[in-house]
Amino acid sequence: MTLNLIKEKIYSVNNIVIIGHIAPDADALGSTCGLAEGLINIGKKVYVVFEDKVPDNLEFILRGIRKKGIDVINYFPKDKNIELIIYCDLSSKSRIGNNLLNDINEDIFSICIDHHESNEQFSNLNYVIKNAMATCEIMYEVFNALNLKITPSIADSLFAGLSADSGSFRYSQTSPNTFFVAMKLSECGARTYDISTNLWSMKSRKKIELLKIILDRMEFSFNDKFVVSYVTLDDFKKLDSTKEHLEGLVSELRDIQGVILAVLVYEQEDYFKFSVRGKDENISTLPISTSFGGGGHILASAARINKDSTDFKEPTIEKIIGRIKDIVAKII
Image (cartoon, rainbow, N blue to C red; front, side, top):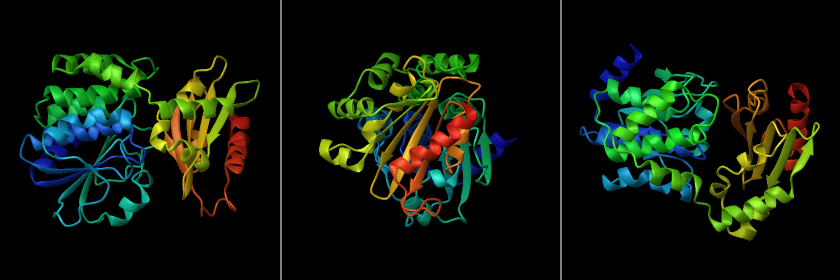
């Protein structure tokens, strides 16, 4: 029923904005860009919007929409008579980004397509499949329901998100349907080797330099089952790097033998952010992230703390790590 309503709404409008979350990952980019290309192919005017910059190593996911003459923008196109907003891979409005959130007209009809356990059902229509491995997995069903053709370039976008969110099909939530969708996308022309190479075998020197800092600052506790590290604003400046270069590095901490919970905290001009990764399905990362207003999945979540936050008196990396450890002590 929900998919029928989504189809009816999409086919009734012309100007559509598709929005993904802050700190875009492959699933957010793959689902937004894949859907955008599919809608462009049926004559819709589409704008793809992310508040944050696309990480350099994920630029390849944009190839399909760029061939259609559009690119990701970081502002809401208020002057384009937008009739519909589609949120992809977004669990809550707070994950849109403060600047975008302030510009969005709440009167515009919205649809959310997502797979996060912490989804807040914030749109007019919400299609949330919480047991799906990735939003890109859900998109295969959405494309079929909307009678949209999955071209090779769309298949590339969707396969990239599916591969990334499943950890190259290693994570426990990877299901028979995940493999089925991967097979179908391959049949549609997804360049699996090219995608895997871009996702798993391309690390910039700046990324490796940040990893050196992170590994040097590792702090273990709770019988070495928990590890935390951090990156400061000064670190970014010294290396002429950005937060986009941190993509995936928290997993390097999680993958240490014996670790079941890993946290990476980093600083920006106006906020701090941390990512949590887990390895034990019986120990959820969500209590950590949700206590800071964040969210995500059982084994992967994140949160952001503004420097003017009323929850902290002058928040610092040390204070944030201290509070995280207090929570970890109760769940590990």
